[in-house]
Image (cartoon, rainbow, N blue to C red):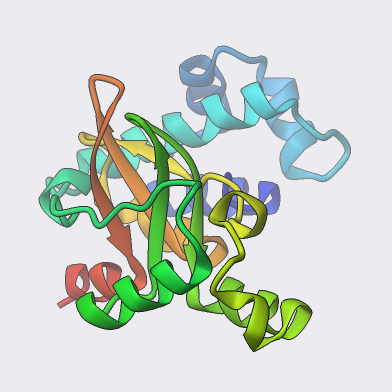
Length: 185
């Protein structure tokens, strides 16, 4: 999930670059940046992604911290065949509030305390033990590269319970809201 499109102008101005420089970095026209910033045009997902990656790179030049330096590398995982009861037990044992769901080495979703409470209301406590995570998990959380500047995490964590960190296409870490707060210390 990307930050809000209407934040592009604010981020660009905060960094202190021109529309032309951002357009060149993102591989779009200056006119396109102008239209997006003024709300006259909505970029495709790929274009928005390139723009935010360009902004993140420029912001990162002013910050040496990367996502990899803040992520927890000890990831608690569950499988889609596990039950909500298994997830609750694991969360209680490890004092965490969300767990990514993996099918072999591929992430297929996430289960969170909020999601469990939502399903508890739908299913009732008696069916909780048998409800499979494959039927109750939320979609895959955002995945960012190990070298991504840490300052791009704040907008992302507002929309997701956790962010997974990858290195060479392999998930190697997880970042939660708590980790993001540690980064600000």
